[in-house]
Image (cartoon, rainbow, N blue to C red):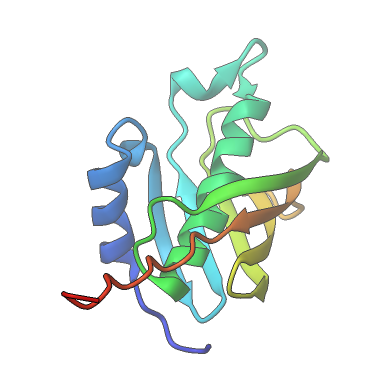
Length: 149
């Protein structure tokens, strides 16, 4: 499976349609087979006391990044869901700087996908967090039985 099914504009349009509450926070910057880069446009609502980006905001970025990477390969499946996450917060992000998630899918199966995310604070060379996420891919709906069957 090496072909991209959804590019950056398609991913952003889909997010606007199915997740209007969060679409304005994220911008897809690059899409490649099994890889994706997405930006969290950091605003005041993403900060915690001390002026740094909160852990829940970094989790949301990692989750959206793997979701978008998965959809870029399989198409618009709104019901793909996170089933596992492991996240390491390694250093404090720069104050008020956007975060960039560099994502790669490590496994893309019929029912599960595993992705790895490195999160960088704009202007910093070392990653500020790392996440590994597993997604459940919804099954294809069964075809309707033939009339009269």
